[in-house]
Image (cartoon, rainbow, N blue to C red; front, top):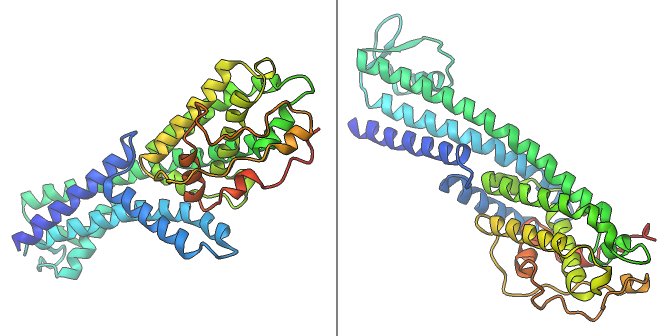
Length: 339
């Protein structure tokens, strides 16, 4: 029976380590949590890739993952402590008759102790097991506290993620659309007022994705509020402005560099947990509509070459890892309200 106790201690220790690495560090989740969620997400992408309702389905997965993560912690603690107490044959007894608890009774005892309900139908016998029961209850209380403090910032970050996507969409829905809206007839300097703030928001969300990997699985049903799609379009536009427009019409060089660095940092955070670098370069954006509106951009410029910006293969992987295609980035329609 001591083998059961030892196995229970291992499960409890592993679960506590998963909780700690997921909630108390800024470098991602525990190995079992992060790999498990990533595997399930990839499976969902394959299963629903051709479904016309795939985006509606994907929107439910993020909250489901969040619930399953916290639930798995409690299941792990419950199972582990059950095995610990199960190995203590005769040391968990009925509170009224002092009869040894059965395996099912011990499961019940471990459950209400971990959840800190403290019902009292059964009790530990002996000082050692009384202390261990107190440790079990403290373990459950700590897990509950960390779970709550883990959920709140993730939900807040999910809102910020959607807000940033919609902010970029307000500037333009495609690379060409962003150039059109930024062009005032003389220069693209109107972007100067928004680029620093966007850089800060992108960097912040990159750190939040690194600290809370489950955030990646909060999917948006519509392309205009999907951050991977909007971020890719924004990055393409910034690269085109940096390399395919006359220097005198661009926003400040520092603002452009900050944006490119912010996107690259975001992709670096995502690559460490969610995306793999594809071997294929994505198609170059069609800038002909921007040229038709008078934007002095070289429409023949091949953004697939190194522009000093983000790795475009990672951008493509980011978009596809969220259930979208590169076509949603470069040809989702022009900005009809652009002047």
